[in-house]
Image 1: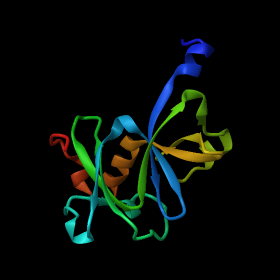
Image 2: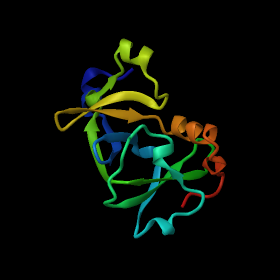
Image 3: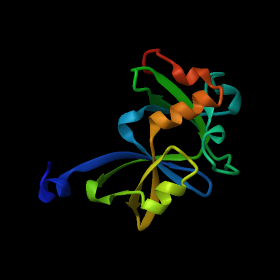
Amino acid sequence: MKSPAELDRLQLSLVVVHLAHLSLVLDATWVAGCQTLKQASDLPATAVPAAALWPIGEQSRESLRLLTLKTPEGGSWQLAFYGQLEFIQLPAQDLHPLPALMQRRKTWPAVKALISHQGCLRVLLDVPTLQQQALEAGYSQANSRSQLV
């Protein structure tokens, strides 16, 4: 077990996905890459639309992104959304477990923890759980075992 001083020095690499009215956080170790697309017709047919997985409501149409996410099996899958990305590093002390009541009542399985960032609490999502949600929603391409892009 790490000492409190060691934990204070431990940094988390995270990707913040900024949507119209919401910012969600992913562990950067699951992110293989991101592309900005000029138009929706540039999306690969295998891309999973974020709206199918995230309860995000209406999205802005500012920048169409294609996020390539790693799978636990070593493959990858792609998530499409309108928004911005930000890579951040935060001290481990900014990671907080879900309060017991929130853990019991959460309706979105991918919610894993809370992150303190810029004076706000943000939701940390579990990427393997997002992949499982995509598979359950009928997006078989989220089970890709192909090489990472």
